[in-house]
Length: 325
Image (tube, rainbow, N blue to C red):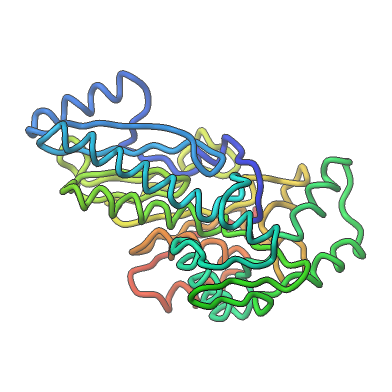
């Protein structure tokens, strides 16, 4: 599971639109391609969830395209305000601080409801209560060591999705338990952004919220493609998903590593308190960003057989593994 952690810039390159919008010259070419089809293309970038995000949309009316991008960023901010641990004033941060939250934000409820259901489905391989492990590992890494077994075991006593109470108007945490929804929030945000764009009548869009979504066509009229960078060499493409439509999420050991060999990293097995060592990365494509994001993290913990079985149980999903070797 992925706790609250700073984003490594390499994370931004692990999933790249192969049709991508890189650089001023590339953007100008894409705008020209869109114009040839009678469309106005706009890209707007910013910061969210501790990383960079970018929304690209095309349509026949420039005013509508700009309004759609404004709505898309408003959707991002709403999700941040509900559940980002990078915002100390978010609803989730307040829940972790106080242990109880009344009249919770609907986005937080939706994320947590999905997270708890996925925890039940995976037998706890996915668990949104692993946040207590983060300071143990991050603190040890800052000292140049690994945490001792007693510290990990103490943190694990606060982990367990059954320690969360979710009611329509109230969320409660057992003492010592804290939540992270970082393994879900960027995929969920991609869903919310895409819905905002569709509400403005935008058919052609590519969204990067840290996870990815695409609809319609590339500015030149061809299908979108998504390049998957090698987790050991972010400058090199390991594979290309073509055509790409829907949503994709990647989990991996490169985002925040606690050891030079990346054996210890920011994704935790809730059963052991240590990092799973099956894969360097897992990419899941799915009909929703929320599902892609959650499944990719669960797959890192489950290993190939369990991950394949999990993804196979969800219609419209596919998984790609990159082994540690």
